[in-house]
Image (cartoon, rainbow, N blue to C red):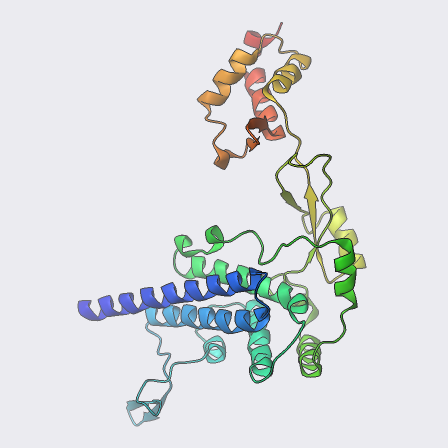
Length: 329
């Protein structure tokens, strides 16, 4: 029994390793500007990634995922012409009653499976921009489930940039993309047919298609700031307004974080009545809190100068209030 459990663990580890590598490769290919065969490659590799992920899950839970026929009390496993076992393909994995994947994520994957059937025997053109939202959802869903089903350390988010593809799009280019209407007839027919059968709540779910709206970033000078992405809560007035006008998108607004030099932080404290809080006290405070550790998010290096964010100013103010008698004039 111990030897069998070790074998199960070893195969599970190999399946997960290959699964993660397949998904990482899929994203890297899609984000590579020198590759034109993006969507086709992503669909095939992500299909493999999810298949191995579910195989690992079924093996861990001792659920049979090989095809077989029942002959009395005995199982007769199906094999290829060369004698290899026939394991379940992704769609069979998703249809099993023991599948741990939720309904909306299944819809996203079944869309990609059907699309693969449409494109595997012929070349397609100009479909990346139509499908990237569903690819993005596929990646985020995969990252969620590999961490939930196995280990948080298995996640792929730490190896990837924030988005599947967040390249800069100039306004003229964006307008050009909106005018593309020459999808291959079979692809357009498949997408329209599949989406027509999806309930509205699933179609608008980010797990099915992760749609974004790009808003130009406003900055006064080159190198003035790092990029920041602000998500608007679904119940916020801005998001509600967007949802009423455009159900195809989720709003992402790019904003500029305010930055403060150390002297400015001290001046702000003086204006708030803490005139005895000087540069020396400020330096001592940030060193004590190790506030320049990037993981704490209190500031950023721009060129060779450190700038503090507003959350650090708030932190300093809380410290001054707590020690009010010490720093008030």
